[in-house]
Length: 446
Image (cartoon, one colour):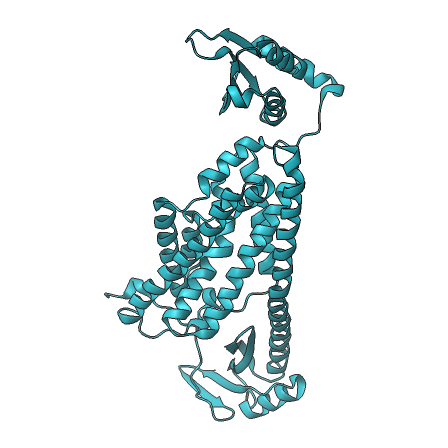
C-alpha cells in the first residue's frame, strides 16, 4: 500500500476534494496553518496500483506546479471504515480497472534513478564480486561462482536505461548507459588484474579451456540467450512491483559477471579465444537484458506523464529496441553455431562409446578431450579404460572411429590388470590422459 500526502495550493481545495471523491478513495484533509501558500494537506491511503491515476488527475489540476505530492510506503491501515470501503469497491465490478499490480511511473522513475548512477558502493561490489567469480572459475567451483553473483550490483543500470527510454527521460537513459559500460569495464579490469597477480604468484600455468566453468563461457550455446532474456524480464518486473530486487539481481549477475571474469582471465593468461568468445557473450547478454526489460516495461503500460511526449517516447523505444534486437540477432548467430557444434560433439561421444563397447573387455570409462577454438570445440583424443579381455588395439579403435564419424582422433587405451595398467596409443600422441586443470588452494601449504 501507499500513502499520498498532498500539499493543496490555494484555490484548489474544492477541486482536489472532488477529484479524490470521484476516484473513490478514502482520504482526509487538514487545514494548513503554517502561513505558506497552501490551503490544506490531504492524506490518501491507497493501493499501489491506484497511485498513478491519482497523480495524473492531480497533475491535471496543476497541483505539481504550486503544491506537491509525496508517495511513501504504507505497511497497513487499522480502520474498519477503510476496510469496508475497500470491500465495497472490490464488490463493484464496474469500478475495477484492469491492473497488473505495478507501481506508479513516478515511483518507478525514483527507483530507477536510485540504482542508475555509478557510486562508490557500485564500484566496490562490482570489484569484489568479480574477484570472487574469477577465483571460482580457476577453482572450477560452481558454488563460489554462484556466491559471487549474490553481491553483484549490475541489475540497476540496464533496467534504469529502459525506464529512461519508456518515460522519455534522456538524463536517466544516458546515466544508465554510462553505468552499464563502466560496470563491465570495471569487472573485466578487476578480473584481469587479479588473474595477472595469480599468474605471477600462485598459478603460473593454467589451461583455461580445460576448466569446466571457464569452458562454459568460452563456448556458450544458444540457451545462454534464454538466461539473459529471462533476467531482463525478471529485472523489469521486480522493479515495477512492490518487492525487493535483490534476488532477481542474481539472475542478471549470472549473465554478466562470470563471462566478464572469463574475459579478464583470457587477457591475463594470453588466451585470445577465451577473451574474445566470452567478450561476445557479455555483449550479447547485456544487449538482450536491455531489449527484454524495454519490452516488458512497454507491455506493462508505462508511458510518459505528458501525453505529447508519448509519441516521442514511442519512437525512441521502437528505434532502440529495433537496433538492440538486430545486433542481438546478428551476434547470436555465433551461439547457434556453437549449439550445433555441441550437438555434433554429443553425437560423436555417443558413437565413440558404442564403438568402444564392441570388445570382449569391460569398458570402465570413455573420455573425450577437445581442442577449443573460437565458437568450436574439436575432439582431439579419446581415452578408453578397460579391464579384462583383449580389449582390441588403440589403432583398430581409431580406424573404426574415423570410418564411422569421419573424424580423425588420437586414441589411448588403458587396460587395468590388477595393480598394473597397460597403456597403448594410436598415432603420435602422448599416452598421458588430459585432465581439466583444477588448482587446489586447500593443499597450497600442506
